[in-house]
Length: 229
Image (cartoon, rainbow, N blue to C red; front, side, top):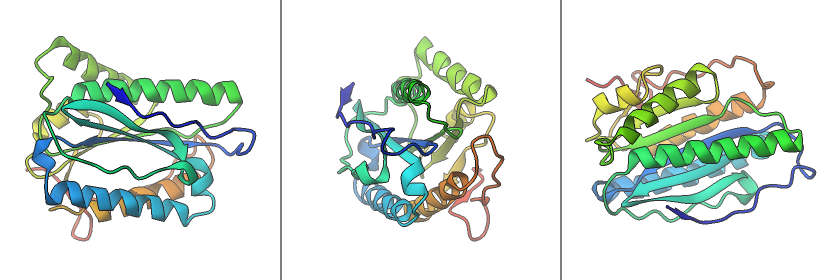
């Protein structure tokens, strides 16, 4: 695993509650061309939308892990002022299981930092986007990955969202995310997806930790997603 280090935001300078947003992005070879370009643009829109909200830019923390050939932490958890939109490049296979394990470990560490700093936090979001199937699902580790996601959801340790781009193995995503049905992206509507994600997290950031916040359904005639067939 490769890691690009980013220093955490200083809690004394910003004692606001945090809404952690972990993005697990498939950058395998099959994402080359227009898919990776649209995903790149979607990330830029995501940052701009968060930055336009005075409260969200203090509370939402974004981390980005990519998986394509290898698993790389491109962005450790940081508020939007320190969130650098990375340059994405598509290559290699799809080590999805390792990416999930790495991401949940990174999230657990950030939670420890919140607690040590006396920082309240909202239920974290883990957002997986893929156009394929894991190339590391043939090992027992994959069963551990599925179990870790299920247990994390059950104890409300995070909310796990799986999005399948055209070509994704939706049956595997259903197994990975049995509590929350995976959504299939309509075409390459990454921009709409990230606008929805930002708006949802803005709504959450305006609430109090532990509050239940209704989210706009992304599935429907005007939504960015659809129920997989």
